[in-house]
Image (cartoon, rainbow, N blue to C red; front, side):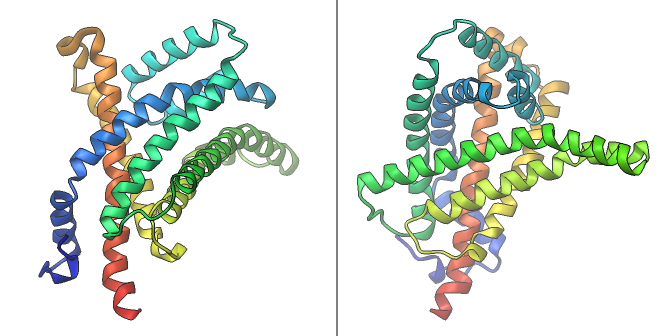
Length: 280
């Protein structure tokens, strides 16, 4: 495989475009979208079943997704989740755990391959280690997402307490409520940082992955909101694809998400090869 240091790319942007073609990022994003789709509903089922042990409701999980997901996609997600949850299957939690971990581990493996290609390294970890890492990352993401769901609940209680105790203005409550976007960004940044740090078969430092994490965090938030706005105002997928419109929208959204994740890994690899390798 041609080493990126041997190219004469005059800028990191041109280098990123070159890598986009070399590493087939578009194909990798499509592969990730497929695995994301397979793991999405088991993951939601598991989360919604699990939140019965916390001061949360099913709508809290769906509201978190609805901040970024297109409306047509949310309708389909809500319908399927309500149907499955309404069946009152006693084995739902067990199925959710198994299906989530297995599907997510396949997705993590696809991400690992993409990142290893970006760093130009071969996978040398055993199957058990690779699956163990996938399970660890899946568990960590579940914990982080539950934390993200709990923060607005307790955050509202804290805001109301400060408001009543110190006699703060209504403006304070409005600003406090709007801080959920900041919290969402922080949560996403933590998730992406863990992904970029552990997934590649490379010993990295946290400072070597923060650029890709920052790009993935804000890039995903902006891209999701922009796509949601486009679908809601210009893209009439239902007229073109009929009842499949919601699925098409969901797949495109997951495809965009996968592409941003892979590009974030490429950005980290570019920084590593240009700034870390020369000093080793």
